Image 1 (cartoon, helix red, strand yellow):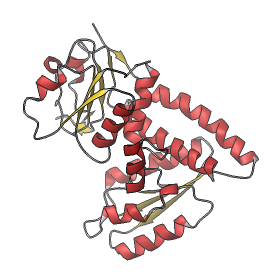
Image 2 (cartoon, rainbow, N blue to C red):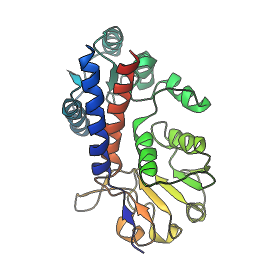
Image 3 (cartoon, rainbow, N blue to C red):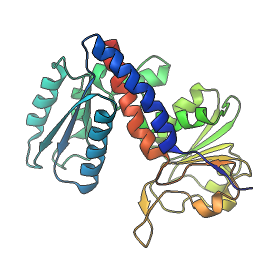
Image 4 (cartoon, rainbow, N blue to C red):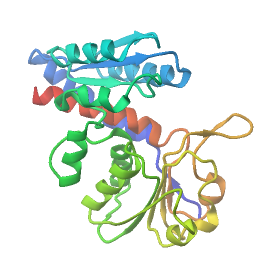
Length: 281
């Protein structure tokens, strides 16, 4: 068996075509969805991510504002800027790119964003809404993973899903989303003994740790669906995930590639959240 690819680029393109139509409909009623992206410092990876997010907004007809600040910006100055964006009626989504400089409390900054504009889904109010099953903005990466599972027609009810990783950005919300779909969910992490014993039982594995070759072919049940959220570099400098792709694709039924899998879907769900915020406004 060779796994079928879940193509995040193709799925993103399909979804964004629908977004463009919804944006056009809003514009016809006098509203242009607006996203503000705030970048503090000169982290190279962050600059690439921010550039991709701004371009994606333009591609579907949204308005975007990119605010760049030096790493010397004080936390108080950043909080004041976020508060101003909260009050700006032209802005429907606010994204403060992480990581922030060490002298800033990232959680305090996130909590300053209005929950109504928290399109990253990181605010405690957003996390609480997800926890209790109420409407709210879901974190973009796990939401993108879920849409990929929907795309292949995966019925999660009664399935065993193993999430490797417990971050607030991916692991924990991913587990909650799978639980909402009536999957039986196991969360594994750095203190989990015998990871292989858990993954061999899984119908779905989501790997989100940031460790190359964390999941190998001998750890995957034949026919399982494997979602690779990892972003790493191999010894040659090529982008790769947490999954040993060449080995695992011979065991799994479906697998996401890196690059071209979850990454494009993360930005697509950011657009979805911003669009939803504008429609509510």
